[in-house]
Structures are given as structure tokens and as C-alpha cells.
Amino acid sequence: MLIAMKHFGSVGIGVTAPQLFRANDRKFYVVKLQNNRLGPKVLVNEFLAAKLGEMLGLCFPVSSSIEIEEDIIWQSPKLQAAGTPIGQHFASQYLNHTEYVGKDNLHNAVNITEMAGILLFDSMFHNGDRTNNRKNLLLHKEKSGYKIYAIDNSHLFRTTRWTIALLNRISRIIQPYYRYSYALLLNDWLSPSHFSPYVRKVKEMSYESICEIVAQIPEEWLPDDSERQALINYVILRRDMVKNIEQALYKQIPKSRGGSKE
Image (cartoon, rainbow, N blue to C red; front, side, top):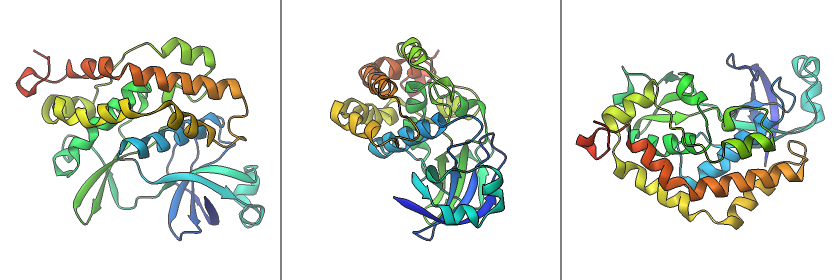
């Protein structure tokens, strides 16, 4: 587990007021705090996405829970003023020198086909925020070239304040997202063959592995066992629906590239 070593202040303008920290691995992380204004389920959503993303090979930044200890809080008047609690928060590795993905630079990315996994994931978990918020896809220059990273999974399940009733209500709804950059990807870049590896990985997720991920969510973020079970039930159901979700996405891909869009 990561341990925060120094606080460097706020970063970005997100509604969750993310903070920049250096961790014990000497890397910098964007951290969402337990007591952010949208509540601790922001961290639950982020953690669930990060762990599932690792399993599915999605292009998310490296992420983990991070421990913020008392001495770090006392060294930062801003953390004290915000009432930051001692304990575990959510950290995502900071990517410097990035630009937002759009129609003018999408073609520069060397991992465009990996976005098939992101579109599938967002459709499975009702994450419309990424297609509506154009700041949630970043282009980062690396040795291999420019790489797309998908950030901010705080709005899985359509909201940061989901309930068991909401999970049950949306669990059988299929609603692909295809605005802005997603429309470009589906219309001009992606084909069904790009989705196939991710669909296969989703189908291979076992009940035990999903339970293990949910069990790793810190108790202080999600103390209600019935909500944990509701998460497990949701993921299992969406796993079993993945072929139908896949077919709904293909309706936005032109027939000339193997889809069913006229």
C-alpha cells in the first residue's frame, strides 16, 4: 500500500478537490480524499474501476489506496483546514505534460485500439461522465509515442452517491455512450475485432475474483456489507450481459468496418 510522504497542494479543478502528494515510492499521485464533497463512494467507484481495470488491461493510470498519516496532515495547514481524516484515501499516478484528447490529436495516439476496452467498461458501468467530460481522456507522451489514458471513474453507476436500489434499477439497462471523442472512435477508428479481447477478459472474470476485489475496498469507505454484496451482484450481472452490451456498441460502428451502423 502507498503511504503519503508530502502534500503539495491542490491539483486541477475537479469537484472532488483532488490533492497532489508524493508517496513512499517517490512518485507523485493525484489523491481524492475520503471527506471530499461528493462522499466516500467516490473512492469506492475509483477503487473498483482501478482493480477491474488491472484485470482487464485497461489504459487507466496506476492507482491504489494511499495511507495519509497524522504527521502529514499536521504539516499541511490546507489539509488541517479541510478536516482531512487520518486513514486511507484514493491515489492515481500523476501524469505531467498531458493534453486533452480531441479530434485534432486523437490520431497521434499509439494505443487507440485500447479505447475499445474503455468504451466497453463505461457502458458496463454506466460511466457517462467520461464521454460528456472532455477532460477525462488524456494524451501523454512516452518513449513509445503518445498514449491515451482514461482518468476519473468517480461517476460509475451514473452517480457518486449510488444506492442498492439504484444498482438494481440500472443493472439490466444497456446504454452505450458515443458522444464527442467516443463518436470519433466508433465512427472512424474502432472495429469489432478491437473489442473482442476485452469481451473475452470480462467473460473470464470469476465470482471469486470479483468478491476479492470488493473485499479489498477499505472498510472506512464502505462499511455496509449489503452494499458490498450489491456491487458483487451488479458486476456479475453485467459480466453475463457483456455480449449484449458489445452488440449495442457495434450499432455505432459502420458496416464498412464490421459494425451494423448504416
